Image (cartoon, rainbow, N blue to C red; front, side, top):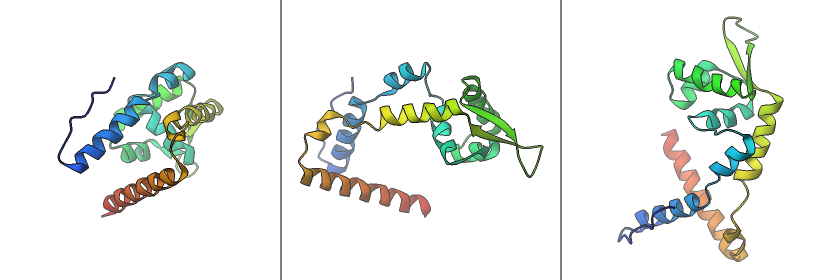
Length: 151
């Protein structure tokens, strides 16, 4: 159970604490692990979702996730052991391998989407106008975050 955030005089800290509390109250990691039969921790989930856009080399996976090459290999090994990905020869360089999703990997992503993207019931209680404001605010936050990352 998430701790109740202390009242803060800083509205930025208070907003963040409330967002964090709401998201953690609706954490679905356990439900996802039950549906898949294993946990997607240790960076495996992030890599699995990145592969949705197409195959990546191990070095691309390592770079995208701030991992060293041996750890990226371990992450891919775990995904491969679960039958979610496979290594294929790179079409331009047979010494390199491309990591690609298997049919089971695509199914796992569909299961994860169905679980993780299901809105909590509380969101359905908001009036349309409030939902519009919430979407606008979250979009602005994500845009600001993206702009900061590009600097």
